[in-house]
Length: 569
Image (cartoon, rainbow, N blue to C red):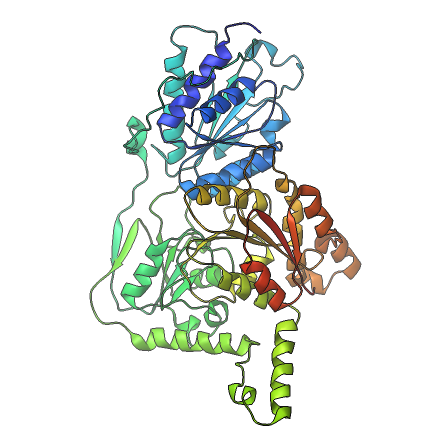
């Protein structure tokens, strides 16, 4: 192999500067054209500069990197070769774009002279991600010229700043397309970069274009109107803080980051449709991206309801009906007394609905200690019947929620399962994520593994993933871990009802031909999940009763466990 390789020199300079700008994780997929980038990443891992992750599937790699970035707040780098490898990143790029998650995609490419002549594994990669990329650059193929290392470092700085939102409305994905000529790499001695890379201490953005960042003023709310606070996905704790300060009902979706505190209204769907409560709302203050009910957008489209959207950044804000009276960067409330009757009515009504839906019956302790043998026996039979009863969606949601604590992570599939959880669980300050940017089922297991890997590096507990069978099977390839990769402590809990039962709730499902609905919407499946888990080297547990599920959820988790929970359609 030749001693010199401009591809290697450029790759090292580029990645080292990304590290200097705060990048901590690099995800690599194998490929020939990208070998210089991959080997440079491996050398930087050996010197302790970064955490390296290897995946063979680019789609999996993209979502894995998405999970890393979600957890760390820093852009993870994904390195892939040319051709269809780049296209496979597109689903994760779209989710990162819609969820404002920083991500850097470095795609190897053929140099200019090999484009447009049907050269093998060559496609049009320039601009492939369109408007989803916050910044995109087709870099000139390195030649070994004297100024190239500094040019690489300059591009790295631009890429990290753009991914974090410099000069833009929000964070998001960045695409660096890097054409490389042969020799595609050279051996890299250990610590070729010399002393450890010094990370940038000040993460403030130093881009002249930062002046174009969207900034919005705040608003001070009076107490004259009957108000609800709505926290959609990614709203964060500021939504709970406003509801608490105002003494207002808090409608907090389960992945909002605001579903905690005394003001949470669990049964909000039913109450928004109630004329005495939802029908009397005069003002709604919206944070984040609500997606889990029809009642919320219906309220925000109602005449007579003042809508205030709190969105510090972003070109697009959640504004159904385009009726928002104000789009602001922050909201606070004037000092004064709380309308306790308004808040109390919501809390009492929600509690009544939740209690009526509960199938849990408090144990009869008097019967347990009765002197009558028949009474004691009846008590024992009742208790055994309860713990051996089949699991329904509500009890599954409550079991997983109850087993998860603040030091854990919980990831929810974006289809029916998140709605089941959202409609059942009480407020609790835990870390919950779901890919709600585009609300697709793609990449859920991959994203969860990225979140688990990053969070456990920082000392967190177990990551639990609750999802349906089709969402799981859509990303089953994520179960494959390359040699040398560390498996985090993760439980993948599959509520298996044999297909896509979310479609059973569509109006057309009640009118169309049942066989046609099953074939093209429900799409029944009978995959042996135990065999699948075994093939990938995961531990498998089947939990058909609440007691078995509770035991599985609380069992020590050394690596990856697949928990299958049979559900009725």
